Image (cartoon, rainbow, N blue to C red; front, top):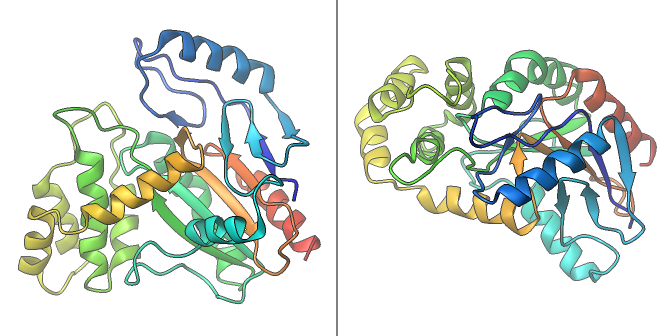
Length: 274
């Protein structure tokens, strides 16, 4: 199985300056040499599609491990199921289980570019591909903005699963992104997360608050984060698109808050291979 990666105009952020790429938020890393290499590799990679003969789903700055030619069928099937199955039974995928394509977003609730994707692109994708039964869409957490003393991205993700316990995962997910103030403002805190719960009319606010305060679902977020690390993701948002109707079709990685046309191209490519 050859696995493809798409990288459009992605630059590695410069940690000292606090500046981000045009489309992604990179995982925090203090190694200046790694950052410099990433910048050079990303500049070279602008507007290219990379297809490696090794079968690793990869592009110059990030890659997907575990589902290449070097992996046996059992290992590949397990990894694909980890990527494409919901993280929590109460946080189901959007769309039909019979859809030919599964699209998984790995994101951070404080990620500016994840919010950009939500604001400008996700609605059209859901309307034109998910609601029509062509694509099944999931979200998995990939915490890139937290640091010692500031774990509010983790807290927001936990809150989403507390909302899921009362049937409000997707409304709550949307509410957080609709109110995003980016990465450089301290806008996420327990009080605002509880206010979001009231705004989406979660039935039992006390139950939600207890769930949030006790970090009941931290394990789900940690498992998602571990998965993102295991498969080699390095930035948010990152999207994995998999054909669910034909096992030998080539999955794609799209990195960054790309325009609608990029996702449309990949979806149509996967559908045509079914």
